[in-house]
Amino acid sequence: MKKNDGVQFPDYDFTSKRIAVTGGKGFLGRHLIKKLTDEGCRHIASFGSSKYNLLNLDDIKRMYDDTKPDIVIHLSARVGGIGFNLENPASLFYENLM
Image (cartoon, rainbow, N blue to C red; front, side):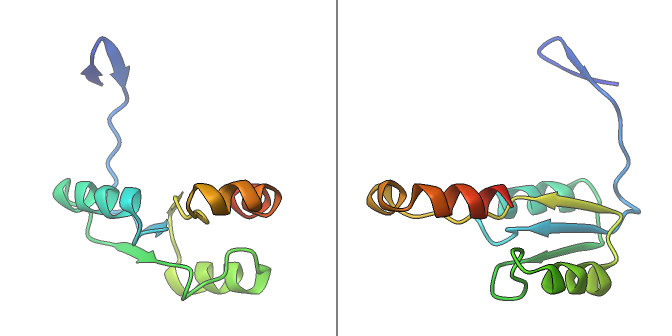
């Protein structure tokens, strides 16, 4: 187990796993992919919303068929500025929850 500020984390070996990262082109996704790559992961599929619409079940199934992931890390989100967020809270909540 690894320790970080007194908290113990289990050791996981993701290096042989196929990992799909939704939102891989965003801020968090880019940094996560770099960290996974630095840790030795070589089977990483990352994509943005232009390839798969994660609100569409057929696209979700296609993403799983295309990438055959062992692990999915879901980081995609619909974002906008403060004004957009204030004008569209329901749709942002729904789309980011899904």
